[in-house]
Image (cartoon, rainbow, N blue to C red; front, side, top):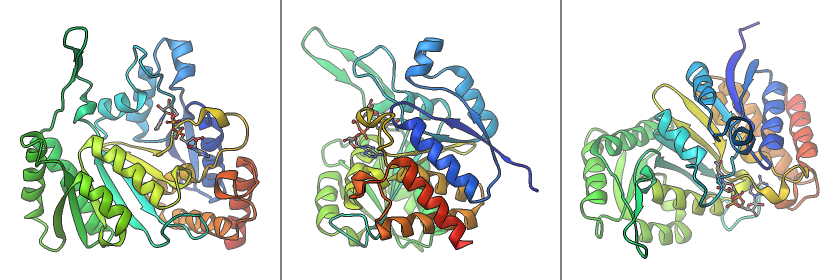
Length: 338
Ligand code: NAD
């Protein structure tokens, strides 16, 4: 038997432990040998180590190169930076990849969405440079660099090529932020010149949002700075039926962390109510990253069958199954497909 993959597992907060456990069970049922290196980040880590992101979490990911992560609660206004932002910056996971693909059986406005959002993950207003200007004004600094802009746009084109996609759209607000977003757009245009086989266009972010709601079929791969990416990717999750089915990946040149788009949904924590699909689909992205494409396709197919049948799905998908029962159904389907 092949050596098991070493993968860092961060269960996270709220519903995180339940949905990551579900994803681990599905990966195991698909026959991929994985040795999970479990580490704690978030509120438990804060209680135990005095920081929500202890150094040994970063060290584990540096060693394994791959992590599956549950959502982590970020207390608003506390002294700690978001674990997610810190993790992405510390490991230079400069790509946030969020596919938004319709799944038959999930209630949504559209049934044929197939979009990929490529969000820059390390700079923009997320650089964390903020200060008060006197008692009644605050200032946040937006950082855009040519290096980060060119590498994220290059990733978008390479991804489009790998996946046989036809078009890359750069999203910006260069009409107002002429220097920062202007630099992003200029960088995108420069990179696009090297990819004559793929169509390139740009859209202003507000117009982009309207177009995505009215004519999503016109778009394919969207690439944008951090803040617009955060917002537009949730909009696209809404186009395919919501956060419960939206997977994501944070990718750098050396490492990758796979996690659902949604947060820790504290109201469902420990209640066997959460939908684990987004985390299971994040594990599908992880398996593709590891070169386990056959297992990834089998899991995707099992998830789609269970959702299409609609008998053993969670509340947010219109059913009455718990997290565990829906996971059992996916695992059962995997064994039927063998
Ligand atoms: P959220 O995604 O946790 O919840 C938004 C809504 O969707 C809620 O109604 C929630 O119950 C529902 N929901 C989310 N995931 C679900 C699932 N898998 N199954 C069923 N219902 C689901 O967003 P929020 O309430 O804004 O954030 C809660 C916490 O999560 C905050 O502390 C936030 O900072 C954090 N957060 C973390 C991440 C991450 O770790 N990657 C991402 C987003 C938010």
